[in-house]
Image 1 (cartoon, rainbow, N blue to C red):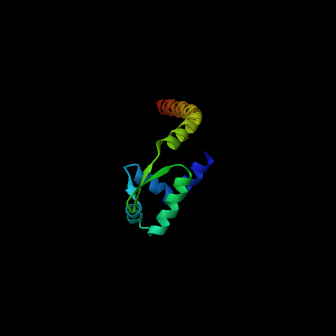
Image 2: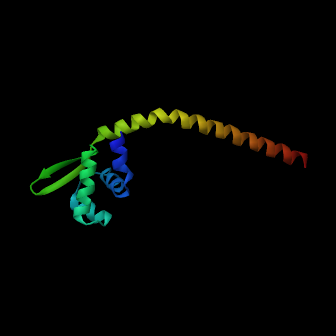
Image 3: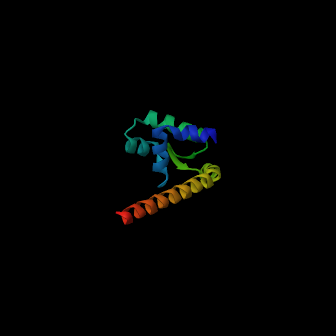
Length: 111
C-alpha cells in the first residue's frame, strides 16, 4: 500500500493515472498531453510500473501503457476501512448544523 501511495503522491504520476483511466496510451501521447519530454514521462511510468499500477504492452517499437485494476481495488479496500469514520463524523456534523438551525429559528421567533 505504501508503494502505491508514494507513486501516486507525485502530481505528474497522478495525472498519468488520470489520463490512463480513459484508456491505454503510448509514452509519446502521455508526454504530449502532460507537456513533458519523453524521458520524464518514461521515468514516471517506470515508477508507476514498479508500484504495479500500470502495465506495458510492447508492440513493435511502441510501448503502450494501461492501468492494472488490482492495485486500485486494494486501495479501495484500504480506504473502505476509513469510510465509516468519515460517515460518522459527517452525521455528527449534520446533527450539529440542524441544532444550530433550530436555535436560530427559536431566536427569530422571540424577536
